[in-house]
Image 1: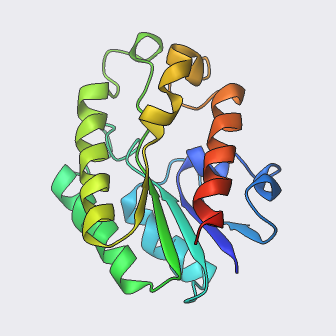
Image 2 (image 1 turned 90 degrees about the vertical axis):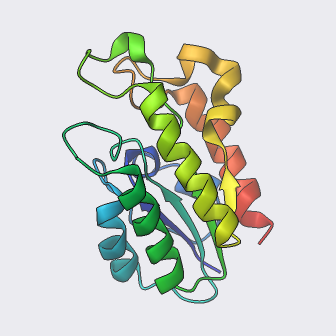
Length: 171
């Protein structure tokens, strides 16, 4: 069984720590990715029916300059899950942001929450497992985020890696 990581920087940044998730991890995630990039990542990874696929998108989709509507996000995520049969899908909901560290023209948690809800809907309607990263990281508060307010901190990654190992092991 392979564990395939798709999506944005929340997964792309764990290259050297990928073995903590499992023995055979392919990290195809890329910083800055939106749901519009998933199809290419999935095709490039060559997903098979025995793979466990973990996907993290939504944070970049919520950026005003990307212009990915919540409806387009939900349709796009559902389409990728349907068109790439895998042994299992784990959808990470976006963890949110530390608004105090972002500029006033950037993402807000209210906007990110709409993408989180859409990701949860896709997971429920496609029998995918949902990893609610916001709830997972909530005990850390603002310490879940790096100084840029967008990316995850080391403490957040330690929690996330444990949760991903558990989520992918049970499939």
